[in-house]
Image (cartoon, rainbow, N blue to C red; front, top):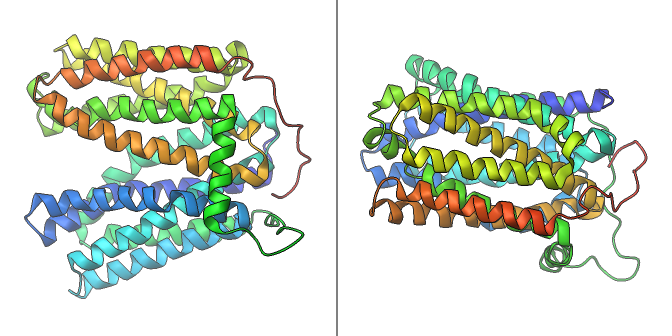
Amino acid sequence: MRSTSPFRVLWGANALSNLADGLVFVSLPLVAAGLTDDPRLVAGLATTYALVRLVVALPVGVHVDRLDRRTLLVVANALRGVAVLGLAVSLHTGAGSLVVLYGVMAVVGVLESAADGAAVAVLPSLVPRGGLDRANARIAGTQLVADEFVGPPLGGILFALAVAAPVAATGGLWLAAGALALALPRGSPAAPPAHGPRASVVREAAEGVRWLARHRVVGALALLGGLASAGYMLPFSVLVLFARERLGLDAAGYGVLLAASALGGLAGSALAAPLRSRLGSRWTITAALALGCASLAGLAVTRDPVVAGILLALYILHAVVWGICAASLRQRRVPDALLGRVGAAGRVLSLLGLAVGSALGGAAATAGIAVPTVAGAAVFAACAVVAVVTLRGSDADALPEPPPGPV
């Protein structure tokens, strides 16, 4: 891959944004817990975030294709920073409330959808098509370090100093990410129709959905994304209970278990590009999904925390490899003018999979704490079969190599 300066800019902006995400993961639930003792209201923060992202996914995808993607990255990150800094000021002055917190979380959900969609869509214009695997792997590896290893402990330390401290740091990081994104090359939005006004947001979103439904390979990736999301949430929605009841771990042990599992993700980010180069997309994705099945099957029968940590690391390794290969394959196959809308349509399936898997995981756990893990293994076995059948010819690029330059 040519390590072009624009890619390094995008990589750096993503790193700052991911670190902010890691701080938010810890700080906002702690802020909520300081404002209310009702667990439903604390949990509702995450529910609000998920529902907002689901509702806005398709219209945001339309605007990712309509607007200059560099500008969208800059504005989305800057506005996230301003919103969160406003929350920090309200907390510092004693004016903070659950209403303000929920409102900020909803705003962050909308803007994160825009920033993520623009970042994924702009990447193919910054690196050659053959370098997408390595570019996505670098971004994924940095995201893991920021989200799992640096952001959460840093957020906890800052929260101990002052309630508003991690919130203010988060806002500053998002503002810095927006400022850095200014160094990306400007592009031009898709040209409006030659005759008559531009189509409505609904019609343009539907165009992306129809394209996805008609394309065998990219449509299969979206289906796999939805199924894999459900398979992931089946066991992970109750993993904290599994760790306590099945593995005998306390809160500290659970934290160590999650940290150990994240190490598998770092290995996956290093292995994804070489594996795809050697095996091709179809067999790399299939092998990764099969590993997801095997790791969950092993987790369902073990009671040893060390073995469970290794198996979870293998599971996260599979998820990162599959995710990198799927993202690169989608970026190579989808026309530039549809990247935002097609990506958003696939994201809707993934978000629905997360919701369904979470609900089913909680229900299945009433029959036995290992039942959701067994069910998750079964889902990933089905995913591996679907990948073998549907991803034939996935490495034959359907689109010509685009010339270097802005979107």
